[in-house]
Length: 292
Image (cartoon, rainbow, N blue to C red; front, side):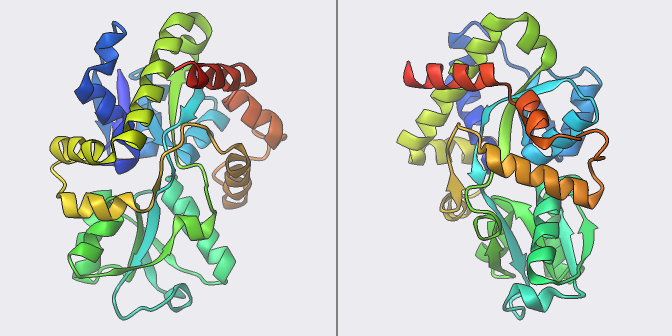
């Protein structure tokens, strides 16, 4: 039972592995479970409805801080989100006192927007939508801008209703975005299955790096998204299965500032991250990556 997000280009590695039969090659029968955003997926994991999945690092760390039994296994992508505004808005400073859409409270994009507010000393109203409704909200004038994962940021650009004024690369270069996680139970009790899942993930990530055009076609076929939008989005993607640990620590700091994580739950950020992404998993990921 593997969770992932609706039409999220960040989760292309899962769609590649699923469509190419990489799981079956390892004797795994994957069941796809799709969620509207990361917090919804983490709720499903906490309810025992998932064994593994792909999710933004912010909802994963927030869930971990609240006691959800998961471990981060690998990165699914770095960066890959963008802030899109009405055409008449030319820069981030012009967003002050404006309404900005996000894909939900507790998403990495909501946290990134908070970071933008701090960096530019602006205040915006966070209005939450299903990610697929964000371009529509911009077109209707319900929001002045929105922040989203790709390809939903690019949709407004291709449709001519908005333009990108800031990317997540601009906010925090090479930041961790989505991660591949497993339940604590798999981590502790099923080492052979864990290794197979890591092998599948690395194989899919390498496929994306070496066969970008084919990976884009797979994403298009499985989501219905037009190739023009996917190709435009691809330019802002960083495919690396090695997690960016320093950016994870930075996110925890911002989440504590926002009140999304209690400092009592995470008194030591370094220790918390080492528990979320244990050293033995870091070593295993490195070993399996070099052994391919």
